Length: 331
Image (cartoon, rainbow, N blue to C red; front, side, top):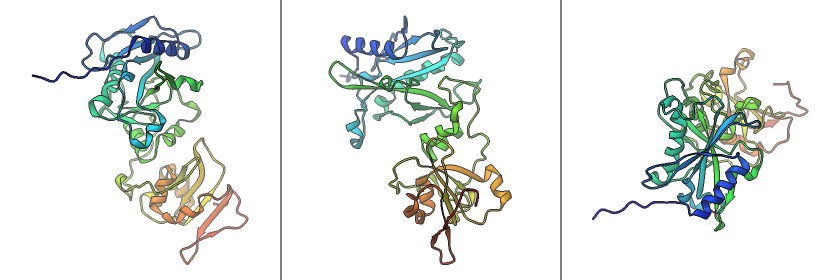
């Protein structure tokens, strides 16, 4: 006798609570893509049309959260077991067109809704999921980054079911392969900092690849060699030159200035022998997490809590020495 596959469905009261949350924070909907066959999780998709306040479509899953994901023990206190997904599409997107160039965002809502069940894992903020190739022929976007919902209201990001359990909402943001590689080498916050004030949550199949201008680099340390060694609170983005991350040189000169972007610690790391011409070429440096640079040179760690406008240079004995009365511009 074959084992029947377990199915997961919301109760009527839970569906009502979910629909009320979606309408309150994302907009009213009258159209739902109902799933006709649901072998495990019943995943409908609410379609919220553009209106005067939102010049875009909002698509939200209704059903993924009926299944409780396998959350790591260390994160269970944050109540991340249940989730729903969403995506925002341009107002001229052909929502009812089943051709793949229009349908792929809906397909990926359904794929990711079942991913935790099929892989016995979980999805949450900052996770990236690769497709392995561009989603469709008219774009090079090839992966998904999960973010908080676009709404400025923090209450949009989660809701309570009638039984008190929490359902979290994550927004699908399509990314390029180079952006995924950068995120894996650093983290999602550092990647998002690259977008700056131009960031738009709406899917744009022709948007700029934020890492396309950067050549692929043969880093001195492989990704799997980067360990979590740094206990650091606060913004952790930093700049470092290729003399450190590619050539493997120790940090010879480090200084902390005012942050250039949200998430920037202000720290700048060089080997100390870079020429002015070298430093003027943006291809010779990159944005990293402080933990990454600490893996290249652990001797920087004791100084990372130093104040803004502080600088250190490695002396002839190989020890870091504070530069007294240092001011920005003295690099």
